[in-house]
Length: 156
Length: 156
DNA sequence: CTTGACCCTAAAGCAACTTCAGGGTGTTTA
DNA sequence: TAAACACCCTGAAGTTGCTTTAGGGTCAAG
Ligand SMILES: [Zn+2]
Ligand SMILES: [Zn+2]
Ligand SMILES: [Zn+2]
Ligand SMILES: [Zn+2]
Image (cartoon, rainbow over all chains, first blue to last red; front, side, top):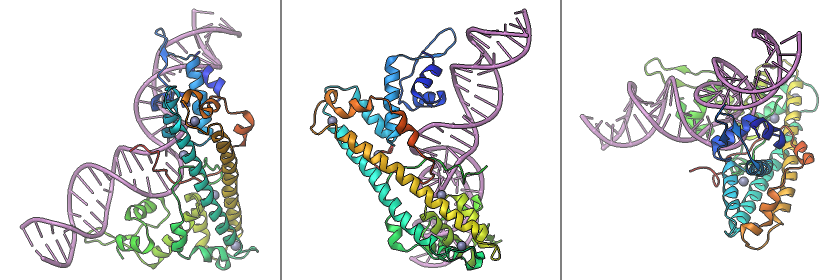
C-alpha cells in the first residue's frame, strides 16, 4: 500500500510516517522504481500500530526502540520489557506527584484574590513577587512525561 | 550588578537570563560602555524572581507575559489575572486526568506479564500489538503542562 | 604575563512532530 | 487534450524552554 493509505489505516499523518522512518522507528519502505513512491506491507502496518500504541502510552522513542528490538527477538527473555514498563510507570507517577503539588500551590495562589480588584491590590501578583522557596524548588522530579501543546496561550 | 551575580541571587544560569532577554521576558539590560557587560538593577531582579516563580508553577512564557503586563498596570482590573490562573489550573488538572488514565492503562498492561518469559510469550508485547481503541484515543486532552526530561531513556 | 573566572554573540541541539517551500505524478473531467 | 485536483517526494525550518558549543574579549590575582 502507499503511504497515504497506511496513514489512514493507522490514523497518523504521512509526515509522521516519513518522520518515523527517518528516526529509525520504521524500516525504510521499498520504493516503486517508476515514481519513487514508498510501498508498505503488513509488517510495516503492524509495526506502526505498535509504535502508535506505545506513543499513546507516552513512551519516548528510545523506550519504544527497546521494545521494538525485543519484539523481533522472540527467544530472548522478556525481563527487559517488564523492567522498562515498570520504569515507565514510575515516570508517569513521578509526573503526577509533581502536578499534584503544582495544583495545590496554584489553588492556594488563586485564593489570594476573590474579587476583581486593581492589579495593585491583587493578592496573586503579590504572592508571585515572592521567590520560590527552596523546599518547593527541590521537589521537582525528573520525568519525561510531557503534555501536548496548549492552543490558548500559544503565539499567533 | 553583573549577570553572574543576578544569576546567583535568583538561582538560574546566565544563559537563561540572556535567553529571557531575547524572548522579551526581561527588559534589555543597560550595558557598561567600557566592556559591553550587562548591568542589572533591583527592578530586573524582582522581575526575574516573578518570572521564575511563574515557571516553577509551569506557566508558559505567553502566560507569564500576560501577568507581567498586568503587573506594570497597577490601575487595571485584575480580572485577567484571576482568569488566567483559573485557566492554568485547568491545564494542570487536564494533564493530571490524562496521566491518571495513562497510569491505569500501564498497570493493566504490566499485569499481562509476571514471570520472565521469552518475548514470544510476553503478554505485554502481545497487548502492544493491538491498535489503540478509539475511545482512549479521543480522551487525550489539550494541556501544555509538560514534564522535564527523562535521563534514563535519552540518547547519550 | 599567564592563568582562571567572568563576560559577549550566534548557532545548534533536544523531543516529537508539524509546517512550509518547491516540485513531480496520476487520474479525472470539461 | 489540457487544466484541475489529489497524491507523492525532499529538505529545511518552526514549535517550547532552555542548554550546549564554538569562538572570542575582559579583568583581577599571582
Ligand atoms: Zn518513560
Ligand atoms: Zn486578582
Ligand atoms: Zn497554563
Ligand atoms: Zn514479559
